[in-house]
Figure 1 (cartoon, rainbow over the protein chains, first blue to last red):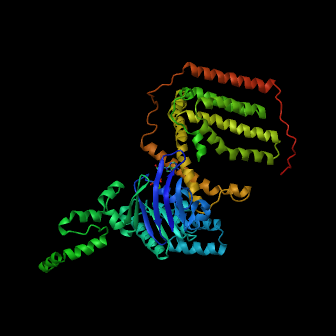
Figure 2: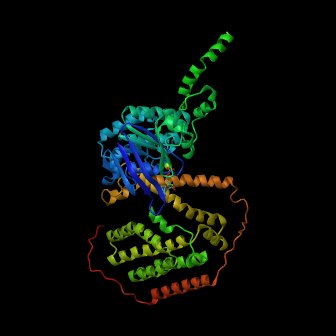
Length: 281
Length: 256
Ligand SMILES: Nc1ncnc2c1ncn2[C@@H]1O[C@H](COP(=O)(O)OP(=O)(O)O)[C@@H](O)[C@H]1O
Ligand SMILES: [Mg+2]
């Protein structure tokens, strides 16, 4: 469990970035932290593995105060994937890149080999095992960066803006992959402002604005609250906006994805659709 | 990367900030030349101390101290390397003092001169625009690169890298995963910048004009005059004065 208690933070000599933040993330939970640029999302997640310590308040991971452990110790349980893969890729080959952290954490060489091979398989990277990470495309580099963290199998996985620079196919894959990780009881926290992605994954959403939490709840509840969405400089998912324009059909207010929209429309419009087909035949 | 704070310009009003950038540049070069001239510890310490009034006058002491603190590791490294390779203790100390003297001189210059002023100064002493532009862009990019460096350090620490673990050689090797991403991203950025500049017709006209012209005031001439006098004094001392040398009666075992 990641627990944030009354946390405030400012960078040395800087203005307040986080202001009295309270947040509990349970094991195996799937949470999206959303909010405008500069809201403090990255700052908040950098505290989860101890890179930053709160100026006031307390953060604990699995009941241990982050102040009491080193970043390396905390990272063993909290894998933080940075937004830009170019900030971390350095090795000569993808295989080396994936082995780096395993060696840092002192895994045995045969474990390193096994983990790296199986992970490259899962993330569809085996073809590149001997390529330099620098010649890969942006999306592939991002996958390598992700693999480099998942390699040591951390219990909590934090991803900063995982969908930026990914095409639709890759986003789809990422979504499936997250589902897979969740089935292994991992905690997943994503930082994003990709409303459509979130509408399809349906995590719990924590809305951050100017360093304060302004909303916390299910995707369906948070993303369809016009006031909240506007306050966090987001837009509603397109499906929700569409439902909003169909007031004559009195749709429920919490539809955010195409699947539930279809469910609703098919019951509402059954007679219309039925008549159309019978006339046509 | 608070080290970089000591080389970053902040807009302020002080007698030093108001000086002509050319005068400040000559002053900095004067300190630089004098620091290179001497290998005597006393002389280098005096040069270092002579830089402090300017820093006080510019009201940039706290940021200068930050850069000094950031430079401690490198200074210590210089000292240790010299000792290891058999330089006498007093000279090893002198080289360390020289490092801090040179660093302070440039810290003083960059803390008090904006990139715009610097560019103007270079142009008005007829440095070709492509060169002055390159130089000022480099200065402008320093803070951005410092942020990048911090992010890279954070990213690698999140992968279990512990910078201050291991023996001396291992510690230096620990910096490889930091330096490579930084160099690669700097190269990427410079290619992007070049393309952006070309698409905005960089270098389309031969002769650029400037809306502002720099004008030297009496204070600026005074600074330049003082610099030449100081350098002349240094040269005189260097040739004609026998400086006392510090003798440290400690025998260092030779490593090589
Ligand atoms: N290293 C830093 N030093 C000083 N200020 C910073 C630093 N990193 C971020 N900030 C500031 O903190 C605020 C929050 O930044 P960040 O957490 O990156 O926001 P987000 O990830 O939500 O876009 C911003 O105003 C940003 O300028
Ligand atoms: Mg961010």
